[in-house]
Length: 275
Image 1 (tube, rainbow, N blue to C red):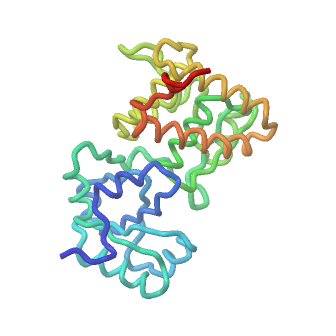
Image 2 (image 1 turned 135 degrees about the vertical axis):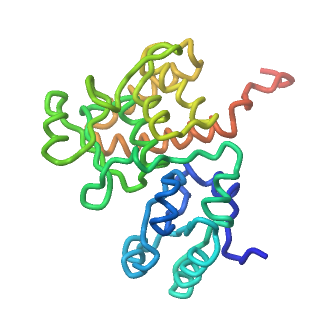
């Protein structure tokens, strides 16, 4: 019988990608993880023996502890954390339970950028509008919640990346950038989905909107023109790129929930109401 502090994989799947998702901590032993080096989206690795370090990293955040099978490691650590006042749950069935969930995405550990001072560091051109806001949203919600983003002049992106160990994105000639395939021109958001294995129906629906707005192909999705309009408005509203990114996070949170739950919903003036 699961403990009261257990969470089922299907419940966690509904949380991932939302601003309410707790920190997901993978404490699988190295041998088990190396045999299957994939993470639940948004999760980070931490040794189960370093409880003091984990507490410092969590701060006051809620967490879900994950091991391979959801038994002694995760149940023991989550119970310990709860005893010490933390809001901790463990994933029922662990990584095995997650793998058994239909269409649950798994993030290849090898695709992750090396952390810089504790979290991934990314750099791109300043004055972002669409792709350069959508990509940070995707990274923070599905890859690394603590990721940091540097916005610099276009000519200096690669130099800044080299000097500070940052990962450049959405400029020509780098790994994380625009591409094309049989679907036509793809934007950096599409590239991130493919590299990180985030092949879910809601994210693909959102990707069509982002691609349509970013490549001026509004026929891909009727929502693309609206995203372009709002993105241009945000870029006019905010002079500071970081402030614009934070405002854009809420925009893409809403678009993701539309893509996941609300695509069938419409709205119109009641037909039986007299003007």
